[in-house]
Image (cartoon, rainbow, N blue to C red; front, side, top):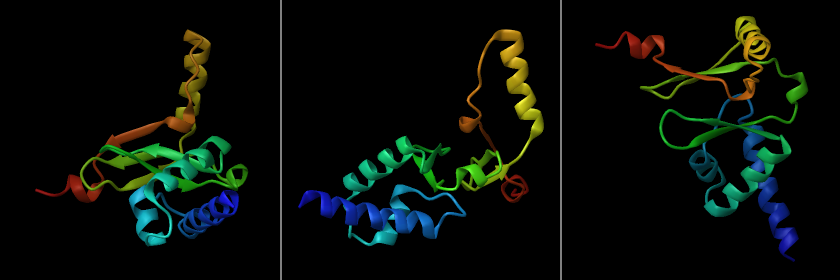
Length: 132
C-alpha cells in the first residue's frame, strides 16, 4: 500500500515541477502549490531522487537552500549557466561559448575538469544595481 501512496505523492510533485518547468522553483514553492497534500520531508525525498535520476536539476541559491527545475527533456535544452542576483534572488539562464572554452583550457593546461552543470555566477541584476 505504501508504494501507491508514494506514487501519488511523486505524481503531485512532478505535476508541480512540470507546471513551472520554464523557471526554477524552491521546495517552499512546491509545498505551497501542492497545498499540504505532500509533507515537506516527502517532497525533499522525492526531489532528491528525481535529481539523482536526472529528471530535476538542482541549483544553489544565494541564500541558504536550493532551487529546482524540471529537466525531463534535458537533451533538447541548450547548455546554459546561471546568473543569480544577490539582492532579489532573480535567476537568469545565460549561454556562453567562452565558458565552455575555459573548461577545455583548464582540462588542457591543468588536467582539471570543470562541471559546467554547476557553474553559477552571483552578482546584481540591472534593477538592483541601479537602486540607490
